[in-house]
Length: 466
Ligand code: ARG
Image 1 (tube, rainbow, N blue to C red):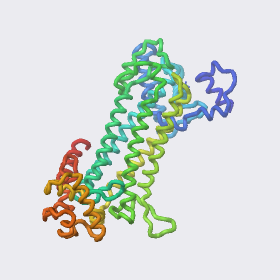
Image 2 (cartoon, helix red, strand yellow):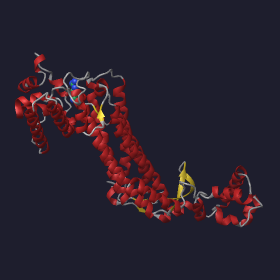
Image 3 (tube, rainbow, N blue to C red):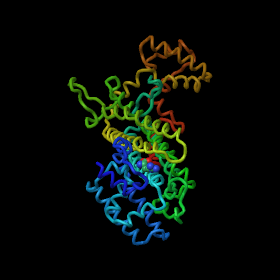
Image 4 (cartoon, rainbow, N blue to C red):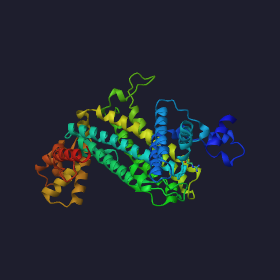
């Protein structure tokens, strides 16, 4: 143990310390178990930094070339599981730097010129989040594709639309699915906003004050695909709003996924029976042989909780922190990594569920025949054909519903004379007005559920999202 600590002292900050760090703190302080995920970004960032140092004649070209090949060798070691991560070297940055010095000696010791771990870690983290956002956006696109394809197969499949989970009006299944396509479309545009805003490079801000070396921050920013360097060195190393924004984008995706998951769970239950979730995405019960449970959808609903939790976690972490860097900020990574892993698993499972979903059109239609879904159409008939003001029409329709309830029949099963006993002006035009098929055809206002519009919306969605 003391041997390992000696090597730590000699390579990094050994100079100022006479005693040894407590084992308790070594374990407590170490983030390598989770921040090793940043190794690619750390190496890429270090290569760009070293190249800039050499271009600016702060180090020799030979140093840069040795640093670069050493770092690439380390990358290979990590990727082939040959790299020995050491907790006493705290984090990915010091693990890589120490190994570099081990491998190439003197030139390796020059890499950390004109930078600090404070600007290094936030640069790595931004690069990691940026690329993660791209993968999440791709998965969202894939999900939109499957939703659009199901919508296309079911653009005129009738189902009850609900408000308060009570039958409200006829809609098509395709129209309902396209609602989620829009929601996930906004999630993708939030991803883009988040990426645009965060894409400024902190490297070169050093510990907090900038540096006295003649560095070229624009060069590094460009090398690492940032749109520019950050403008304030203190802000650079203190801020994590980009990570909070990332978590809030993921939180909203999680909430949207949770809502569709909830609907899939309901629709596949015995009471509804609207859909069948493919076996691949369900599990059995250890005791009840008949059961087929929608576990994937339930877990998607359940996982959204941690996406909310991680957002709250990081938001609270930040609110009391004075500028600039404090070690509390090391706590920024786990919520981000956790949300990332979970949202991707949720998306993969949801894509699979939607892709293999089977629809029971008959059950949907049956459910639509209960609950007077065309009551609004009846009121609209009274307005349009009989010139009755909408408020009065609403009241008259209410009375007709009561009558139908009494007779235990649907609206179109009522006889004309029954209807006329409530409103004598009612004529035979009412029949076509209150049928489900005419109700759906007439919902042709922009964004409405008529199958013709749904087809149009599908081709628009393809153009906009795929
Ligand atoms: N592992 C640290 C983190 O994740 C790196 C930065 C450390 N900086 C420092 N001044 N101790 O935040």
